[in-house]
Length: 411
Image (cartoon, rainbow, N blue to C red):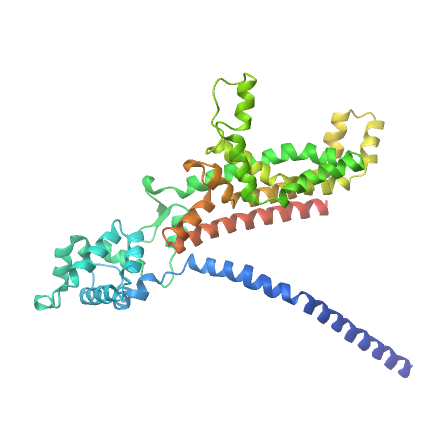
């Protein structure tokens, strides 16, 4: 009995060693992919996320000023140590050609902050030492805005090392001097409108792809082999063509002298060319075409798994074709509808090229503004905050889909 148990234990150990070796081999096979994903996906996203709450611009070029403002409690008049520290920092940053970095960040916190800093940098460099060392009077003479307590409090809020300024700005919110979070002034509220526009365009594109893609996927799964193969090629064909080329093709088709307008004019449908490009119509049409395969393919995959006997059974029991479709066939396709809608909507809210090429000024989506802040204004913090908003929306949608899909599986 003892020898048999020992043999069994040896067998179990050998099996465990073989299992560990199999898992180690599997891990080594996927290790290059994991490394690739970490350095090309997780690291860039992590770097973007940290830029949405890190705030080190002012501290990097004005260290003496930041040390004073961080030690100040924000109440009453600014400390006397602030003015010589600020003067020294502005002179040093002007000499190092980094004053624009601080000016850009101050401009986010103070209206006209960039002009205030750059004007001061030009004038204060000519002053070696003021009478009695009174730098406060010097700043007041350059611009009275400097000696206002609210300006110093704005400098204090911009001193970092972390801030909620960018994330609040991405939602058109502001923090008052008392710490309360309120809506931004009416003239500064732009991002909620952009988010609303982004979600409305993405929702409309998702609805159109569903209305077009559902019957197409149904026919594709019910057609004969040759026709189904041909319809599948039509779905996959856009993937073999550059997105830029596909979008440019819509410019040719939808322009005033394009094919569509010429056909409508020839048929007498319209008297003059319709404006179909560089507006919302062009954006929705082009995005619907580009994203249609992402709706058709999940739908077709689900529809192929539906047994036709279920519908035939419903018909044999007296159900009309419409009733059999509504109560038997369509509920079985809901997983495909949800997967396709999720794919299309998430892809649509992050679209950049198509709205930028075929949309007008009022049709640009949130991705365009992220690119604008990165490439033109070098406002990485706000660009990262808008990216965080997009990432949050995508995460919420994914969780909702997982809950719905999980619930359906459990049901």
